[in-house]
Structure formats: C-alpha cells, structure tokens
Image 1 (tube, rainbow, N blue to C red):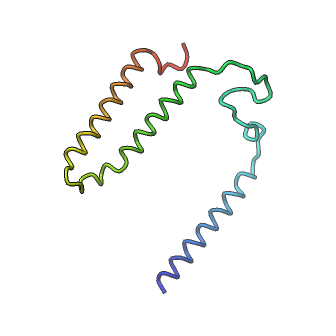
Image 2: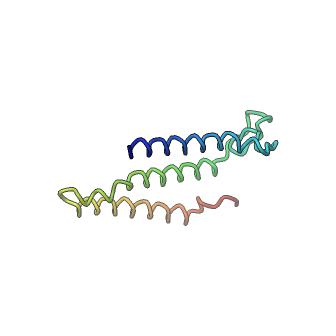
Image 3: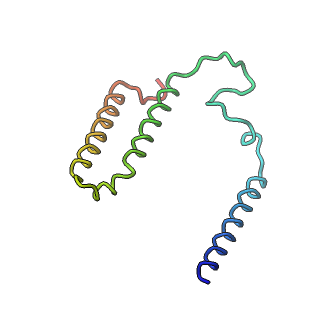
Length: 115
C-alpha cells in the first residue's frame, strides 16, 4: 500500500511539474528569447564570418574541466577499493596536472576574453 501511494505521489508531482514547464514559458514570449542562439553570431548574417578562436578556447577549457568533474565523481566510492590510497593518489595527480594547466593558461593570457 505504501509503495502504491509513493508511486502515485511521484507520478502526480511529475505530471504537475511537466504541465508547469510547458505552461510557464508561454507567459512572456520575447523576440530575443525566440531567436536562435548561434554562438554569438547573427543568425541572419553571412555564414562565412570567421570563428572566434577565443570562444573556441574557452569552450575547450570548459569541456576539459567538465570531463575532470565526471572523472572525479566516483572518487568517494574509491574508499571501498582494495587500494584506496592509490586511487586517491591518481585523483590528486589528475587534479594537480589540471591545476598546473590552468595556471599556465592564465599566465599565457588564454583566459582573457577581451584584449
């Protein structure tokens, strides 16, 4: 009986949230919100514009640190492995190398958006 009530409550709550998520954006449509976002480019302009290398570099750095978070996410379960110190050593080494790369990019000026 308890499982049925929990399932019904979860189903009802998710249906309410789905309904709200479809209804809420229709309240104030704006021309700026309705236009497609094309990485800072004008979507109605020429398709032959040069691509910003700074934007590409920041996007690559974001993906690198996002991947680092995904790799370190299972680290708390590393305590249950036969050699937890080795697991934490490798995780610390990865973090150290990424921090070293971030400091290098910072010193080289790769993180500056505007010159």
